[in-house]
Length: 250
Image (tube, rainbow, N blue to C red; front, side):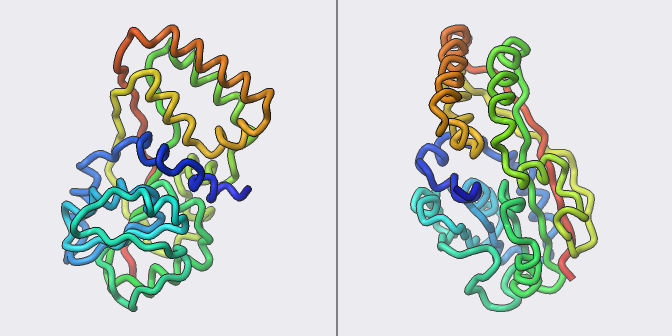
């Protein structure tokens, strides 16, 4: 199965168990735009970034290749969802003041996407893509859950994930615009151990590894032990910095 399509599996679970991006990120994005008429949230998934953009832009077009993801998109009066590939859309030339890609740029065909960004964006519009690596938290939780599960999952991550983890290097994504330095943004969540496990189950590598019955049993045992040990701890704080690439569209 192509990794970009694993997000269509149990899309309702994906929508419920993804972390929220910091509000300061969307304020910064809006400040980079001369006009705030229309933003494109490309590869929107469940629409979390679309909701953040909707607080700053008059209209948001949120697209995804997955009908299942679009079906579970969070509703907002000024957000329009549609099933469209990032590389070929129906939008008119010069539509957008901002083009944003949250947790999805590394799945897109760069050679086809960048011309589409240039075509659909207004001259001088802003582009930004971001993604997160892994969450960090309690040392005991790291040792008993994150570290051993990630060791099992390591062979199942797609090369695209590693492009994001390395910070969307310009040479790896063929970035055609002059990069703009972005502030350091960090996601912080307060999750119970069950919520942490539910989040891990949305990972593409988790879904692929779980297809192996032996690995599925190993992962399930680690999850069960963690739930037993940490369920009384209540909500625990996790954090992760965002990897970002931004630039002015000429």
